[in-house]
Length: 343
Ligand SMILES: [Zn+2]
Image (cartoon, rainbow, N blue to C red):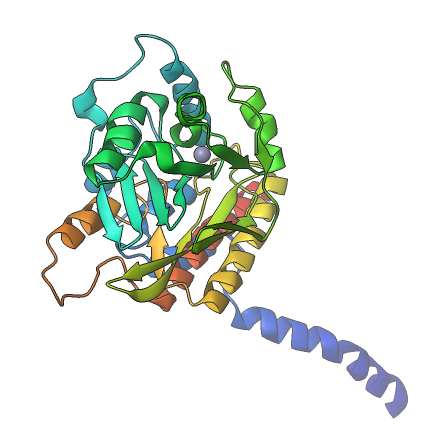
């Protein structure tokens, strides 16, 4: 009579091991994933969590509110505002959005409104521009912003767009018509861009892992769908007084209750993959396309006040880059669990 019990025990063994290992992990619920994200929050990622996690979480809700896009940070509203901003008379008062940009690394310049950032990568053969802000900021922040730091907007050879929402691609049409750079988007977001009221011309399709080389500098583009179907994230080689670092931009961040299950699943695997890529590249700098994500305006002010020999505040170290991508991933897992009925 021993044999059936032995067989039963052997059959139940994997179940017991499974139960044990499940108990060791946090439960797969919205609350638990948000708690994992919350435990990692600091000024390098709290703003990203504010826009990616369900319900507002922030180290300082008042300060993150002040740099959000005026009507809110959600992708749909940001895109709508971008389209509206192309029409005459739709420019909001300058004092609501104007901010002073500046140099962040030897070869990287932050062109920024209060809410959104674009990045000029200076190379030996011209400028790679990452994102373009809302259309209304094109002259003051992109054109004049480049001139203020001694760069010539006519030297923009490539514009790479993280995703086709108006707060990032709003000035593409103007820049394309004026300076004739190449414009690069992922194919899925070219489809989004084509649906805009006054679309810019379809130019180059990005590919996953594409190495975009201009002169002495190579920026790498990765497909990281989730915020949009064709969101691109980036690795940018930078130098601080000649010392090399790698900057990571997570190209699409905000999630909402309307984000589909498929997009949430894409976002989770994109963030996991980007974390491995960033780690493998030694990325130790976080840049973003909303100032709120990593308190970028405060970092810029600190960098501007830096005395010779002091460290660059933008260099946050590899663990912080990993933490950033873990936070947004846990936020997406939280949304997914809630959507699947596990609050
Ligand atoms: Zn967006």
